[in-house]
Image (cartoon, rainbow, N blue to C red; front, side):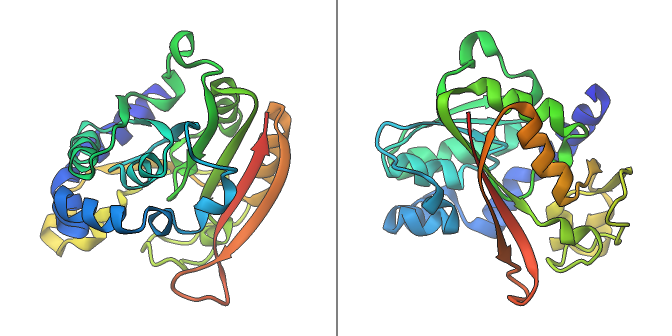
Length: 250
């Protein structure tokens, strides 16, 4: 687990800031877009929050801060936990440009300090495909449970397990059996946006993909009460599943 975390950190430190500038614009540009309509920037995830004002949110693997800044603009008190210093650099510049305040802890999510953050949050929120970076969902869900206050909610939105067997989202990763428990190496997500020679220089990530029952059972067995499991259409093909959202309560 420690070695895979180091491997994924190396991958996410590689060229990440330059990628966000290239794909999302300079932080000042992106901030303008977010502040024009923060709710839109949350996509469909906003519907899973009961409210935002003064809600303490742990944004797990919050990456470049686009969702954290939108949440802060809506009044939430946001702490991002992510493994990449490069992601933090973009996120903090983005928050400053937007005129909002967020906290950003660079760490392995599984090593979040519970002395400091245990039972500190009203909501833990994650999106954009993060579960495959963790090789034991039970350990991950236990950490999420520990971060929440009693009655707090976990909003976990991720890539649909259908992507294990069909590359509906265009990630250019080989298909695997739906029930495969294999841990494998694959290029980091934004490598595919570069040409062949540059693409070859990107470090590999260590991944483990899950099926639906593994995800739901990890939530339930951790002690959460499962409130909703929604499936969302793929952005490439609305007739096929591309994402899902779990809403669970402590």
